[in-house]
Image 1 (cartoon, rainbow, N blue to C red):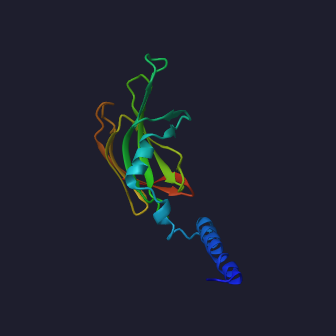
Image 2 (image 1 turned 60 degrees about the vertical axis):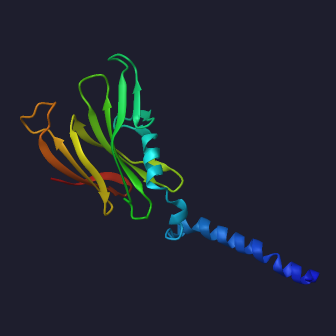
Image 3 (image 1 turned 90 degrees about the vertical axis):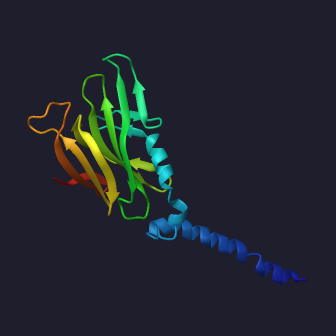
Length: 190
């Protein structure tokens, strides 16, 4: 049996160790120590995709729409009709912090013949996703592929050549985009 003096010496050690561990874990992101934390804060790819399909997006014109399963639609006539859908989605690390981000292509239609495509990124902040700015891709372009690799977004699409009707883009275009100081930017186009 331990005498009372030994009990007093042993008991404080456990709370002190727990308090030190909690303090380390809370200060690790501030100190830039994300390596050991990534197992706890990294969301699985499936969860990032689910969050992206149900996110409230701000479009390039400033309007906001919350998607449900990758889709938003309201209104019935040319004065109030809106449809926004998630056209493509890729997940990968864009800011080299071992956290997955989502590159998202949205297509919107406001009742006319145009379908306007834009690219945005949802940055993983560990507890939530934060949308960056949007890059306009054009009206009635055709998305071929979207991928994230090496911290960059690679997008293959068909855009309109000088003789193409709006229905039928034929110019093969590749865009390389990335985050620069937290802003989505076009880095290369060919």
